[in-house]
Length: 117
Length: 503
Image 1: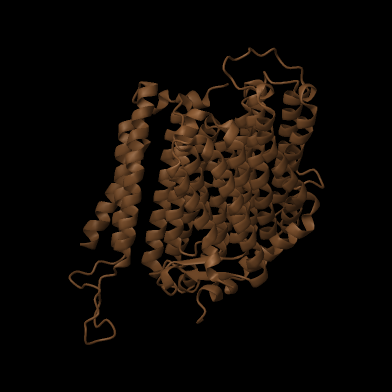
Image 2 (image 1 turned 135 degrees about the horizontal axis):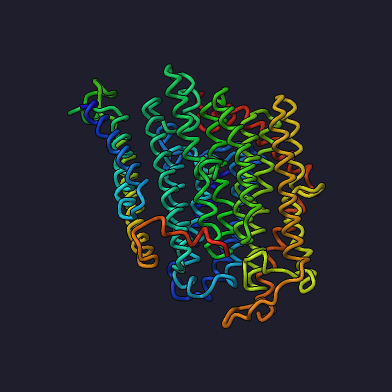
């Protein structure tokens, strides 16, 4: 399971970065989304995967009796998902507006900021 | 003492951001409420500053969850100094924005977002938890995206696409680094991480982790190969926004680098060589970029990059003197860079252009204001006894201590380049006979403004210039503060004891 997840995360990172490096604005958004998901999965994986052991202390005991799933990474991912969702929706609106202004789906056309003024 | 005072700078900004949202349609009210909020924040920040300097590092556990399980907020000398500087810059910008930012922008929630940005900055400087630091960073960048795009001009949107993409990438690298950190140690509390990180067997992974953090924060603080988003975006926003970005946003990255590499990671030979060589390359790429620009705001954008190098060089040498120099430079740079962008805003209001070639005659037309502008410009260069001189002295002293003579050479050479840029700027903009500029219709020229509006543009510049002068002439007290911060950073035991009292 860990190996499959690790490979998946690697593929997601690589394709996310690759898409961000393309010139097209739409591919930029796809890249941002893939990269965001890759990071969330990485946090999940590095919190160690333990199956079927909820982090609940049994009623007749004061401590955990066996290995348990670490709940913290999941809380972290929840926060990170919400944040990256917000950022991605902002990105989509921003790119739409920029596309309307520049009238091209090409980052190379966006060179007003480098122009002499 | 009530520890909860640590939360007050955060709470004040949050309360005012919410209050300003309720006044969404009443722009005139917003201007005054924002100034009241900033004054209140300055009062809170300076009392927090005074208390923490008297009582030493203090922490408070959010929700009463004990460290390292809950989120800790820690106020140490570095944190409260940064909060105080944020409050000073926040006040200057909020007075200035009321007149300089145009009404269309103010209507779309400029002031609430400005206070949310300040909220994020205060939070980032006071948190003692690394994931919480990520969340504050996100609050900062989301607010900065809105401030950058508000108004929706073509150049703004294009700049924002670049700014967004690279800052998003930086956040993702930062988050990746946090994931690896958590995988290695199982903790996120910075004080707890000191011992846990030192105990990790796999040193190679620790080094990779340190470099991941360095790249993440390096993009945010515009280090050498990672700075391209900055000159592409800062000059597109209104001057008030550029002022707060130029003053504070890159410095949060530097603050985070200082925190990480004094507390959690040690600066070993690899990291040292990376830090020092990026610092030197940052000097040169910033200074040379600045030399060839014609737009006055781009000149200062590149100078931001150039001067980040000094702080990184200080962190790279990692002696007590070097860190004190870096901290002093940080204090000086925040005030001066904000002031310079406010100044470019004023020049634009006087002449209606940002082009250095077309500008001129400013000294003949506004002699008193020109003398005022000379203060931040020459503080930036560091002509003794103005504020930029003292930190460079410490940095050069540290260079001799660590026998890194090439750093000394680079510092001196980049100071010389800065001097050249400032002198060129001065003679082009203030002394040269200017071109006859076309009169722009419906443009609110400075000379046409009402007297009280003029004052609200000039007062922040005067305020920040006075602080710059204080940093220069009262260098002894600022140096004392920097030395104290640097002592605390070199010996993290205070910090750990304040957060985890049991050990």
